[in-house]
Image (cartoon, rainbow, N blue to C red; front, side, top):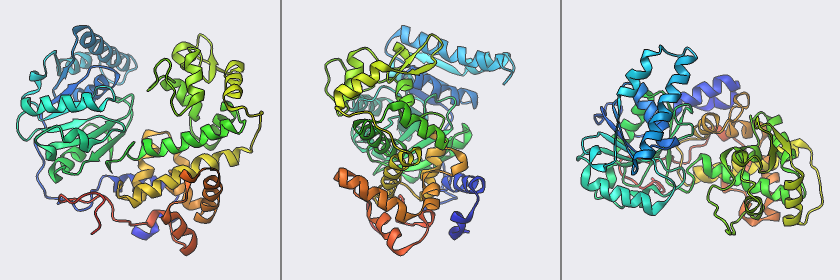
Length: 440
Protein backbone atom coordinates (compact mmCIF):
# COMPACT_ATOMS: atom_id res chain seq x y z
CA UNK A 1 0.00 0.00 0.00
CA UNK A 2 3.04 2.25 0.36
CA UNK A 3 2.82 3.66 -3.15
CA UNK A 4 -0.92 4.28 -3.15
CA UNK A 5 -1.26 7.17 -0.68
CA UNK A 6 -1.73 9.74 -3.43
CA UNK A 7 -4.58 7.73 -4.88
CA UNK A 8 -6.61 7.69 -1.66
CA UNK A 9 -9.62 9.97 -1.16
CA UNK A 10 -8.95 12.66 1.49
CA UNK A 11 -10.84 10.91 4.32
CA UNK A 12 -9.13 7.57 3.64
CA UNK A 13 -5.77 9.29 3.32
CA UNK A 14 -6.18 11.11 6.65
CA UNK A 15 -7.05 7.82 8.39
CA UNK A 16 -4.02 6.04 6.91
CA UNK A 17 -1.69 8.99 7.58
CA UNK A 18 -2.83 9.05 11.22
CA UNK A 19 -2.22 5.31 11.56
CA UNK A 20 1.29 5.63 10.11
CA UNK A 21 2.17 8.57 12.36
CA UNK A 22 1.90 6.23 15.34
CA UNK A 23 4.68 4.04 13.94
CA UNK A 24 8.32 4.91 14.60
CA UNK A 25 10.69 3.50 12.00
CA UNK A 26 13.54 1.52 13.52
CA UNK A 27 12.03 1.04 16.98
CA UNK A 28 11.88 -2.54 18.25
CA UNK A 29 8.13 -3.29 18.51
CA UNK A 30 8.89 -5.69 21.35
CA UNK A 31 11.13 -3.19 23.14
CA UNK A 32 10.41 -2.42 26.77
CA UNK A 33 8.59 0.69 27.89
CA UNK A 34 9.62 2.67 30.93
CA UNK A 35 7.08 2.60 33.81
CA UNK A 36 4.82 5.63 33.77
CA UNK A 37 2.54 5.69 36.79
CA UNK A 38 3.08 9.23 38.09
CA UNK A 39 3.68 12.57 36.38
CA UNK A 40 5.07 15.89 37.56
CA UNK A 41 4.33 19.19 35.83
CA UNK A 42 6.26 22.42 36.37
CA UNK A 43 3.95 25.39 35.87
CA UNK A 44 0.25 25.76 36.69
CA UNK A 45 -0.57 28.26 33.96
CA UNK A 46 -2.86 27.68 30.99
CA UNK A 47 -0.52 25.12 29.48
CA UNK A 48 0.55 23.35 32.65
CA UNK A 49 -3.00 23.06 33.96
CA UNK A 50 -4.26 21.81 30.61
CA UNK A 51 -1.51 19.20 30.41
CA UNK A 52 -2.30 18.04 33.96
CA UNK A 53 -5.93 17.47 32.97
CA UNK A 54 -4.89 14.92 30.34
CA UNK A 55 -3.24 12.73 32.96
CA UNK A 56 -5.86 13.16 35.69
CA UNK A 57 -8.55 12.27 33.16
CA UNK A 58 -6.63 9.12 32.19
CA UNK A 59 -6.32 8.06 35.84
CA UNK A 60 -2.63 8.95 36.21
CA UNK A 61 -1.65 10.86 39.39
CA UNK A 62 -0.16 14.31 38.81
CA UNK A 63 1.96 16.66 40.92
CA UNK A 64 1.90 20.32 39.82
CA UNK A 65 4.70 22.59 41.03
CA UNK A 66 4.59 26.39 40.99
CA UNK A 67 6.76 29.12 42.47
CA UNK A 68 3.90 31.11 44.07
CA UNK A 69 0.90 29.95 46.10
CA UNK A 70 -1.52 32.32 44.32
CA UNK A 71 -0.42 31.01 40.90
CA UNK A 72 -0.93 27.45 42.13
CA UNK A 73 -4.40 28.17 43.47
CA UNK A 74 -5.40 30.05 40.32
CA UNK A 75 -4.23 27.16 38.14
CA UNK A 76 -6.07 24.52 40.16
CA UNK A 77 -9.24 26.66 40.16
CA UNK A 78 -9.08 26.83 36.37
CA UNK A 79 -8.69 23.06 36.11
CA UNK A 80 -11.69 22.54 38.42
CA UNK A 81 -13.76 25.05 36.43
CA UNK A 82 -12.90 23.29 33.15
CA UNK A 83 -13.93 19.93 34.60
CA UNK A 84 -17.16 21.39 36.00
CA UNK A 85 -18.02 22.93 32.63
CA UNK A 86 -17.57 19.55 30.95
CA UNK A 87 -19.71 17.83 33.59
CA UNK A 88 -22.39 20.51 33.21
CA UNK A 89 -22.48 19.72 29.49
CA UNK A 90 -23.08 16.04 30.31
CA UNK A 91 -19.71 14.75 29.15
CA UNK A 92 -19.25 12.83 32.41
CA UNK A 93 -21.06 12.59 35.80
CA UNK A 94 -20.64 15.45 38.29
CA UNK A 95 -18.98 13.17 40.85
CA UNK A 96 -16.21 12.52 38.32
CA UNK A 97 -15.02 16.13 38.83
CA UNK A 98 -13.83 15.40 42.38
CA UNK A 99 -12.35 12.05 41.38
CA UNK A 100 -10.19 13.76 38.78
CA UNK A 101 -9.23 16.64 41.05
CA UNK A 102 -8.18 14.14 43.72
CA UNK A 103 -5.53 12.79 41.31
CA UNK A 104 -3.84 16.22 41.23
CA UNK A 105 -1.59 17.29 44.09
CA UNK A 106 0.27 20.58 44.31
CA UNK A 107 3.54 21.88 45.72
CA UNK A 108 5.80 24.92 45.77
CA UNK A 109 8.91 22.73 45.87
CA UNK A 110 10.61 20.97 42.95
CA UNK A 111 11.61 18.27 45.41
CA UNK A 112 7.98 17.06 45.31
CA UNK A 113 8.82 15.64 41.86
CA UNK A 114 11.53 13.29 43.15
CA UNK A 115 9.48 10.12 42.72
CA UNK A 116 7.75 10.93 39.41
CA UNK A 117 8.23 8.66 36.38
CA UNK A 118 7.83 11.61 34.01
CA UNK A 119 8.37 15.32 34.63
CA UNK A 120 7.08 17.87 32.09
CA UNK A 121 8.41 21.42 32.26
CA UNK A 122 5.72 23.87 31.08
CA UNK A 123 7.12 27.32 31.91
CA UNK A 124 7.25 30.21 29.44
CA UNK A 125 9.54 30.14 26.40
CA UNK A 126 12.91 31.16 27.81
CA UNK A 127 15.87 28.89 27.06
CA UNK A 128 17.99 29.98 30.05
CA UNK A 129 15.10 29.43 32.46
CA UNK A 130 14.39 25.98 31.04
CA UNK A 131 18.06 25.00 31.30
CA UNK A 132 18.15 26.15 34.93
CA UNK A 133 15.10 24.02 35.71
CA UNK A 134 16.55 20.94 34.00
CA UNK A 135 19.83 21.35 35.88
CA UNK A 136 17.88 21.33 39.15
CA UNK A 137 15.74 18.37 38.07
CA UNK A 138 18.92 16.42 37.37
CA UNK A 139 19.74 16.52 41.07
CA UNK A 140 16.18 15.80 42.26
CA UNK A 141 14.36 13.36 39.99
CA UNK A 142 15.00 9.62 40.34
CA UNK A 143 17.22 7.78 37.84
CA UNK A 144 15.35 6.44 34.81
CA UNK A 145 12.61 9.07 34.92
CA UNK A 146 11.77 10.84 31.64
CA UNK A 147 12.47 14.60 31.61
CA UNK A 148 10.32 16.44 29.08
CA UNK A 149 10.06 20.03 27.93
CA UNK A 150 6.86 21.48 26.52
CA UNK A 151 8.70 24.04 24.39
CA UNK A 152 7.02 25.00 21.12
CA UNK A 153 10.19 26.06 19.30
CA UNK A 154 13.35 26.02 21.43
CA UNK A 155 16.42 23.78 21.11
CA UNK A 156 15.71 20.56 23.03
CA UNK A 157 19.37 19.52 22.68
CA UNK A 158 20.45 22.70 24.48
CA UNK A 159 17.92 22.01 27.25
CA UNK A 160 19.10 18.39 27.52
CA UNK A 161 22.72 19.57 27.80
CA UNK A 162 21.90 21.11 31.19
CA UNK A 163 21.50 17.59 32.61
CA UNK A 164 23.86 14.69 33.11
CA UNK A 165 21.32 12.38 31.47
CA UNK A 166 20.45 13.76 28.02
CA UNK A 167 19.35 10.24 26.99
CA UNK A 168 16.30 10.69 29.27
CA UNK A 169 15.27 14.07 27.77
CA UNK A 170 12.55 14.54 25.13
CA UNK A 171 10.27 17.30 23.90
CA UNK A 172 6.53 16.89 24.46
CA UNK A 173 4.94 19.82 22.61
CA UNK A 174 1.29 20.02 23.65
CA UNK A 175 -0.98 22.44 21.83
CA UNK A 176 -3.21 24.98 23.55
CA UNK A 177 -5.74 24.35 25.01
CA UNK A 178 -3.80 21.23 25.99
CA UNK A 179 -6.83 19.48 27.49
CA UNK A 180 -8.65 19.77 24.13
CA UNK A 181 -6.16 19.77 21.26
CA UNK A 182 -5.30 16.30 19.95
CA UNK A 183 -1.82 16.87 18.55
CA UNK A 184 1.34 16.04 20.50
CA UNK A 185 4.65 16.76 18.74
CA UNK A 186 7.16 14.37 20.29
CA UNK A 187 10.59 15.91 19.78
CA UNK A 188 13.44 13.42 19.59
CA UNK A 189 16.71 15.05 20.64
CA UNK A 190 20.19 13.89 19.61
CA UNK A 191 20.73 11.62 22.61
CA UNK A 192 17.11 10.57 23.37
CA UNK A 193 16.99 6.82 24.00
CA UNK A 194 14.68 4.58 21.95
CA UNK A 195 12.74 3.47 25.05
CA UNK A 196 12.02 7.13 25.91
CA UNK A 197 10.60 7.63 22.41
CA UNK A 198 8.57 4.42 22.60
CA UNK A 199 7.22 5.26 26.07
CA UNK A 200 6.24 8.77 24.94
CA UNK A 201 4.42 7.44 21.85
CA UNK A 202 2.57 4.93 24.05
CA UNK A 203 1.75 7.62 26.59
CA UNK A 204 0.16 9.76 23.87
CA UNK A 205 -2.22 6.90 23.12
CA UNK A 206 -3.04 6.49 26.84
CA UNK A 207 -4.05 10.16 27.18
CA UNK A 208 -5.95 10.30 23.89
CA UNK A 209 -3.46 12.29 21.83
CA UNK A 210 -2.30 11.87 18.24
CA UNK A 211 1.49 11.78 18.41
CA UNK A 212 3.90 12.72 15.63
CA UNK A 213 7.64 12.20 16.06
CA UNK A 214 9.71 15.21 14.95
CA UNK A 215 13.32 16.35 15.20
CA UNK A 216 15.05 19.32 16.80
CA UNK A 217 14.89 22.49 14.71
CA UNK A 218 13.43 25.92 15.42
CA UNK A 219 9.64 25.53 15.55
CA UNK A 220 9.82 21.77 14.87
CA UNK A 221 7.35 20.90 12.07
CA UNK A 222 4.16 22.89 12.66
CA UNK A 223 5.49 26.23 13.89
CA UNK A 224 8.38 26.17 11.42
CA UNK A 225 5.94 25.93 8.51
CA UNK A 226 3.60 28.45 10.13
CA UNK A 227 6.46 30.97 10.31
CA UNK A 228 6.95 30.69 6.53
CA UNK A 229 3.24 31.34 5.98
CA UNK A 230 3.21 34.28 8.39
CA UNK A 231 6.22 35.89 6.70
CA UNK A 232 4.58 35.62 3.30
CA UNK A 233 1.30 37.03 4.66
CA UNK A 234 3.19 40.04 6.02
CA UNK A 235 4.79 40.55 2.60
CA UNK A 236 1.27 40.84 1.16
CA UNK A 237 0.53 43.65 3.65
CA UNK A 238 3.56 45.46 2.21
CA UNK A 239 2.00 45.03 -1.24
CA UNK A 240 -1.13 46.87 -0.06
CA UNK A 241 -3.44 43.99 0.80
CA UNK A 242 -5.57 44.28 3.94
CA UNK A 243 -5.44 41.70 6.76
CA UNK A 244 -9.13 40.87 6.29
CA UNK A 245 -8.63 40.18 2.57
CA UNK A 246 -5.88 37.69 3.40
CA UNK A 247 -7.93 36.10 6.19
CA UNK A 248 -11.01 35.85 3.98
CA UNK A 249 -9.03 33.94 1.33
CA UNK A 250 -7.61 31.48 3.90
CA UNK A 251 -11.03 30.95 5.51
CA UNK A 252 -12.47 30.42 2.04
CA UNK A 253 -9.86 27.69 1.54
CA UNK A 254 -11.28 25.91 4.58
CA UNK A 255 -9.36 27.10 7.66
CA UNK A 256 -11.55 28.27 10.55
CA UNK A 257 -9.49 31.46 10.84
CA UNK A 258 -6.86 33.34 8.89
CA UNK A 259 -3.39 34.43 10.07
CA UNK A 260 -4.47 37.83 11.38
CA UNK A 261 -7.55 36.51 13.15
CA UNK A 262 -5.22 33.96 14.73
CA UNK A 263 -2.71 36.65 15.76
CA UNK A 264 -5.44 38.70 17.42
CA UNK A 265 -6.68 35.63 19.28
CA UNK A 266 -3.20 34.63 20.52
CA UNK A 267 -2.18 38.21 21.36
CA UNK A 268 0.05 40.44 19.26
CA UNK A 269 2.41 41.10 22.18
CA UNK A 270 3.78 37.55 22.42
CA UNK A 271 7.54 38.06 22.23
CA UNK A 272 7.13 41.86 22.21
CA UNK A 273 7.81 44.50 24.86
CA UNK A 274 7.26 48.25 24.83
CA UNK A 275 9.75 50.06 22.62
CA UNK A 276 10.88 46.84 20.93
CA UNK A 277 11.77 46.84 17.26
CA UNK A 278 11.16 43.31 15.98
CA UNK A 279 11.14 41.87 12.48
CA UNK A 280 7.45 42.78 12.24
CA UNK A 281 7.15 46.60 12.33
CA UNK A 282 3.39 46.52 11.72
CA UNK A 283 2.88 44.38 14.83
CA UNK A 284 5.21 46.69 16.79
CA UNK A 285 3.24 49.79 15.78
CA UNK A 286 -0.11 48.20 16.67
CA UNK A 287 1.18 47.07 20.07
CA UNK A 288 2.50 50.58 20.82
CA UNK A 289 -1.10 51.79 20.35
CA UNK A 290 -2.20 49.09 22.84
CA UNK A 291 -3.82 47.19 19.97
CA UNK A 292 -2.69 43.79 21.22
CA UNK A 293 -5.51 41.60 20.01
CA UNK A 294 -8.85 40.43 21.30
CA UNK A 295 -7.79 40.82 24.93
CA UNK A 296 -7.48 44.62 24.50
CA UNK A 297 -10.50 44.89 22.16
CA UNK A 298 -8.32 45.85 19.20
CA UNK A 299 -5.51 44.41 17.10
CA UNK A 300 -5.56 43.98 13.35
CA UNK A 301 -9.35 44.10 13.83
CA UNK A 302 -11.66 46.07 16.12
CA UNK A 303 -13.74 44.00 18.58
CA UNK A 304 -17.04 44.74 20.29
CA UNK A 305 -18.00 43.58 23.80
CA UNK A 306 -18.94 40.15 22.41
CA UNK A 307 -15.51 39.84 20.72
CA UNK A 308 -17.09 40.10 17.28
CA UNK A 309 -14.50 41.45 14.86
CA UNK A 310 -14.76 44.27 12.36
CA UNK A 311 -12.19 45.55 9.82
CA UNK A 312 -10.32 48.41 11.46
CA UNK A 313 -9.69 51.81 9.91
CA UNK A 314 -7.03 52.45 12.56
CA UNK A 315 -5.15 49.23 11.69
CA UNK A 316 -5.47 50.00 7.97
CA UNK A 317 -3.95 53.45 8.56
CA UNK A 318 -1.09 52.03 10.65
CA UNK A 319 -0.32 49.48 7.93
CA UNK A 320 -0.27 52.21 5.26
CA UNK A 321 2.03 54.37 7.42
CA UNK A 322 4.47 51.50 8.01
CA UNK A 323 4.45 50.04 4.49
CA UNK A 324 3.87 53.10 2.35
CA UNK A 325 1.80 50.83 0.08
CA UNK A 326 -1.34 51.93 -1.75
CA UNK A 327 -4.40 49.67 -1.21
CA UNK A 328 -4.30 46.69 -3.58
CA UNK A 329 -6.05 43.37 -4.13
CA UNK A 330 -5.31 39.88 -5.45
CA UNK A 331 -7.62 37.00 -6.38
CA UNK A 332 -8.31 34.72 -3.39
CA UNK A 333 -6.74 31.76 -5.20
CA UNK A 334 -3.45 33.63 -5.63
CA UNK A 335 -3.43 34.71 -1.97
CA UNK A 336 -3.90 31.07 -0.93
CA UNK A 337 -1.10 29.84 -3.19
CA UNK A 338 1.28 32.58 -2.01
CA UNK A 339 0.72 31.44 1.58
CA UNK A 340 0.57 27.68 0.98
CA UNK A 341 3.57 27.30 -1.35
CA UNK A 342 6.13 28.52 1.23
CA UNK A 343 4.65 26.12 3.81
CA UNK A 344 5.01 23.22 1.39
CA UNK A 345 8.53 24.32 0.45
CA UNK A 346 9.46 24.45 4.16
CA UNK A 347 8.01 20.94 4.57
CA UNK A 348 10.47 19.73 1.92
CA UNK A 349 13.33 21.32 3.84
CA UNK A 350 12.12 19.61 7.02
CA UNK A 351 12.14 16.25 5.23
CA UNK A 352 15.53 16.93 3.64
CA UNK A 353 16.96 17.64 7.10
CA UNK A 354 15.38 14.44 8.49
CA UNK A 355 13.26 16.33 11.02
CA UNK A 356 10.12 14.33 10.18
CA UNK A 357 9.70 10.65 9.43
CA UNK A 358 7.50 10.92 6.37
CA UNK A 359 5.44 13.47 4.34
CA UNK A 360 2.12 12.18 5.69
CA UNK A 361 3.30 12.91 9.27
CA UNK A 362 3.50 16.59 8.30
CA UNK A 363 -0.13 16.44 7.23
CA UNK A 364 -1.12 14.84 10.55
CA UNK A 365 0.57 17.75 12.38
CA UNK A 366 -1.33 20.35 10.38
CA UNK A 367 -4.67 18.54 10.51
CA UNK A 368 -4.61 18.11 14.29
CA UNK A 369 -2.69 21.15 15.51
CA UNK A 370 -3.35 23.97 13.04
CA UNK A 371 -6.87 23.49 11.72
CA UNK A 372 -5.94 22.46 8.19
CA UNK A 373 -9.24 21.62 6.41
CA UNK A 374 -9.62 17.80 6.58
CA UNK A 375 -11.33 17.70 3.19
CA UNK A 376 -8.05 18.88 1.64
CA UNK A 377 -6.01 16.13 3.32
CA UNK A 378 -3.17 18.29 4.66
CA UNK A 379 -0.55 20.52 3.01
CA UNK A 380 1.41 17.66 1.39
CA UNK A 381 -1.73 15.94 0.08
CA UNK A 382 -2.98 19.30 -1.25
CA UNK A 383 0.42 19.91 -2.87
CA UNK A 384 0.28 16.50 -4.50
CA UNK A 385 -3.06 17.41 -6.08
CA UNK A 386 -1.78 20.82 -7.17
CA UNK A 387 1.40 19.43 -8.75
CA UNK A 388 5.09 20.13 -8.25
CA UNK A 389 5.44 22.27 -11.39
CA UNK A 390 2.81 24.75 -10.23
CA UNK A 391 4.29 25.03 -6.72
CA UNK A 392 7.81 25.40 -8.12
CA UNK A 393 6.68 28.22 -10.41
CA UNK A 394 5.08 29.99 -7.43
CA UNK A 395 8.22 29.54 -5.30
CA UNK A 396 10.46 30.87 -8.09
CA UNK A 397 8.23 33.94 -8.24
CA UNK A 398 8.49 34.42 -4.46
CA UNK A 399 12.26 33.77 -4.49
CA UNK A 400 12.70 36.53 -7.08
CA UNK A 401 11.27 38.90 -4.45
CA UNK A 402 13.17 37.34 -1.52
CA UNK A 403 15.98 34.76 -1.92
CA UNK A 404 15.07 33.28 1.49
CA UNK A 405 12.16 31.61 -0.31
CA UNK A 406 14.35 29.71 -2.78
CA UNK A 407 12.75 26.41 -3.88
CA UNK A 408 13.88 23.30 -2.00
CA UNK A 409 15.99 20.80 -3.98
CA UNK A 410 13.37 18.08 -3.59
CA UNK A 411 10.65 20.33 -5.01
CA UNK A 412 12.82 20.98 -8.08
CA UNK A 413 13.49 17.27 -8.48
CA UNK A 414 9.79 16.36 -8.30
CA UNK A 415 8.93 19.06 -10.81
CA UNK A 416 11.56 17.67 -13.20
CA UNK A 417 11.28 13.92 -12.67
CA UNK A 418 7.68 13.53 -11.51
CA UNK A 419 6.46 11.36 -8.65
CA UNK A 420 4.21 11.80 -5.64
CA UNK A 421 4.86 14.20 -2.76
CA UNK A 422 3.49 11.53 -0.44
CA UNK A 423 5.83 8.68 -1.44
CA UNK A 424 9.09 10.49 -0.70
CA UNK A 425 11.56 8.64 1.50
CA UNK A 426 14.41 10.96 2.44
CA UNK A 427 15.70 8.95 5.39
CA UNK A 428 13.42 9.99 8.22
CA UNK A 429 14.31 10.37 11.89
CA UNK A 430 16.95 7.86 12.88
CA UNK A 431 16.88 5.58 15.89
CA UNK A 432 19.49 3.67 17.81
CA UNK A 433 21.52 6.71 18.82
CA UNK A 434 22.35 8.04 15.35
CA UNK A 435 22.23 11.78 14.81
CA UNK A 436 19.09 13.03 13.12
CA UNK A 437 20.91 14.66 10.25
CA UNK A 438 23.22 11.70 9.71
CA UNK A 439 23.05 9.80 6.45
CA UNK A 440 22.84 6.03 6.48
